Length: 102
Image 1 (cartoon, rainbow, N blue to C red):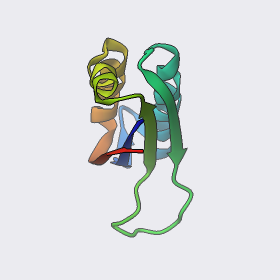
Image 2 (image 1 turned 30 degrees about the vertical axis):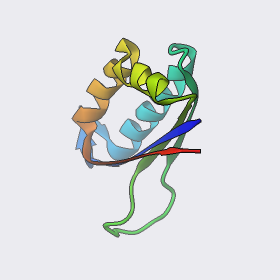
Image 3 (image 1 turned 90 degrees about the vertical axis):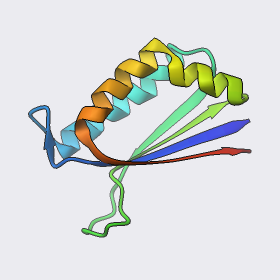
Image 4 (image 1 turned 135 degrees about the vertical axis):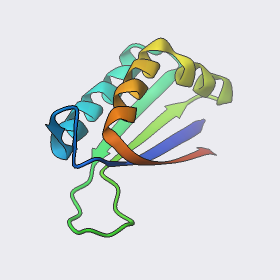
């Protein structure tokens, strides 16, 4: 099993929406992906509740599970995933990624 973890810092305002509104949109879009991409075992999305202005705090985190690296590559290149990526790129300032074998 491979886990893919992504954390983002969102822009305060983007696409005419607040950070909180865009975080909710990201959550819905990302959580819908397992229904559309068979290689994706699960997708869990969390929206930060920690308060403060620390540089260490991210706004949204995604954890997905795939059976192997080939499935992860298939997920990454899938058209439905790419549509979500297109939205996310417009609303985020920063992104961090970790992939690891579980």
